[in-house]
Length: 257
Length: 327
Image (cartoon, rainbow over all chains, first blue to last red; front, side, top):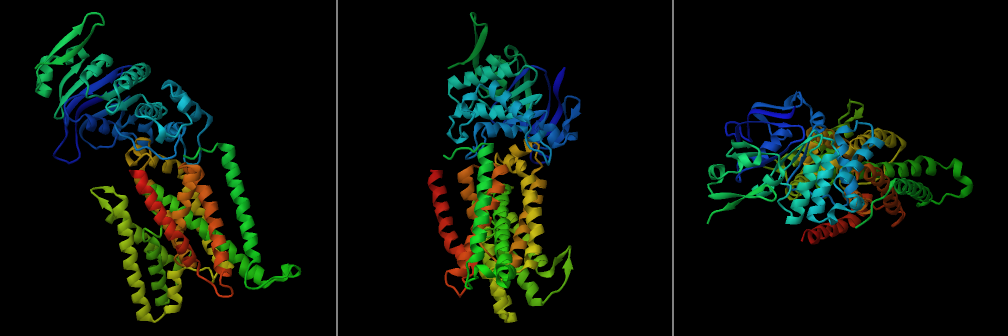
C-alpha cells in the first residue's frame, strides 16, 4: 500500500512561476526512494512541499488517507518528518535534548514529556547507534555524528515518511556509507525519501529512484531502469556508460571522456 | 561548555535561587536611610508600608523584564533581543508620558490610563521594529537591533518634545530614568496579574520556544504554529514590559543580561531557562534597588541608572564574545 501519493503536483514560491511542474509518483511502505537530478531541478522544493513549508498550487499530496492540506501542522508532523540539509546547531543542547524535540508534535499544551516520549527518544537514539553521544553537546559533534543526531530527532517523531534533504552531501565517504546503510535499515515499517547528488550512492542503496529535471519527471523506477546513459543524457547532458559489477550485482555509471 | 543539569540539579538550582531571593528581600528590607530598631518591627510604618511593597515590586519588575527578555530572544531568534534594545520600553514610555501629559483618566480592560497607553505604544513599537527588520521575509539580528536603536532615538525625541511642550519635566523624566521610589501596595497589585499571566504564557509555550531554537521552518515541521506562537508570546512580552514601565519607568538591560547569563549556566532549554531567569531577575532587581536606596543615602540613585551602569559594559562584553565565537 502506498503511504505517500503525489498527483499532478504543481508548486513553487511565486504563483505563476512553478518550480515543480506536474509531478506524480507514489511511495510504498518500506521503500527507500532516492530523488536525483541536476541542481535546480526542484528536489528540495518537492520535499519542502510535502512537509507543508511550500504551498501546493495544483494537484494533491496524500499521506495515508489524508490530503496534506487537510492535516494541521501537528497531525502532519506525526506522519512526516524532515531532516534539512543544514540544520542550525543549537548552543548548549545535548544530543538527547535535541532528539526529545522530535516529540514536540505529541505534547499537549499543558503537558511535558511523558515516559512514552522519553522511550521514543531513547528508541530513536538506539536505532541511530548514538547512545554513547547522548549527553554530548551537539556543538561538539562531528559532521557525521551531528547528521545521525538530526536523523534521530526526526525518527523520534515516529513518522510514516522520513524525508532527508541531501543527507550525505557534507560527509566523508565512510559516513556516506554509514548513513545510507542506516537509512536502508530504517525503512522497515516506514518509507524513506532522500535527495542525492551522488547517483552511484543512490542507486546502490535506494529501492527506487526518481530522476527530475526542471521540475519534471525524467524517469522513475528501480535504479537499474533509471540510471541509463539515455536518461542521464536527458537530465544532465553528460555522456556516461553504465558498468555493472558481476560479483556484487551492483552497477555504477562512469563518465565518458 | 557548561554541562546539562539533570532533573534534581534543576530543582536544586530553582530552590537555591528561591532561598537567595528571600534572603535578598529580607536584607533589603532592613537596609535603608532610616534604621528600624528590632523592637519596633510590627508597628513600623516604614517597614510595612514603604519598604516591603518596594522590595516586592522590585522583585516583580525583575521577573517581568527578565522573562520578557527570554521570550523575545526565543521568539525573535535573536540572543540580543530585549525590551530595552528593541525600543519597546521607549515606546511604552512615550505612551505613558502622553497619558500623563494629557491627564487622561480612563479604564480599559481593567487597566488604568497610564499602563493602558504604555501597553498600546509598546505593542506598536514591537510591530514597527519587527516589520522594519525583515529583509525579504527574514529577520536579521543586525537590522533588528538597528531598528530598535532608531526607534528608541525617535521615542526619546518625542519624549523631549512632550516635556518641552507641557513643561512637565519632573514626572515625565521619571520614565527615562526608571525608579521604584513611588512603590506602593497598589502598584504591586497592578503588576501582579501581568507577572502571573506573562510568566505562565512563557512557561506553557516553552516547548514551542525550544522548537524555535532549531529555526523557524524546523519548528513548523515539528508541528509548531510559528505565527500564532509569535503573536501570543510577543504580545505577552509587550504586556509585561508595559506593566513594568508603567510603574517603574524605563529600566534597561535586565531583560538582556539575565537570560544570557542563565543560558550560559544552565543551557538553552526553556523549561528550565524561564523559571531560573525569572528568579534571578527578581534577585538582581532587589539587589539593584537596595543599592539605589543606600549607596548615596539619604539621596536615591534611580535604579535605571544603576542597571545601565552595570548593563552597558556587560552588553559590550557579550557583543565582543559573540564576535570572537563567530570566527
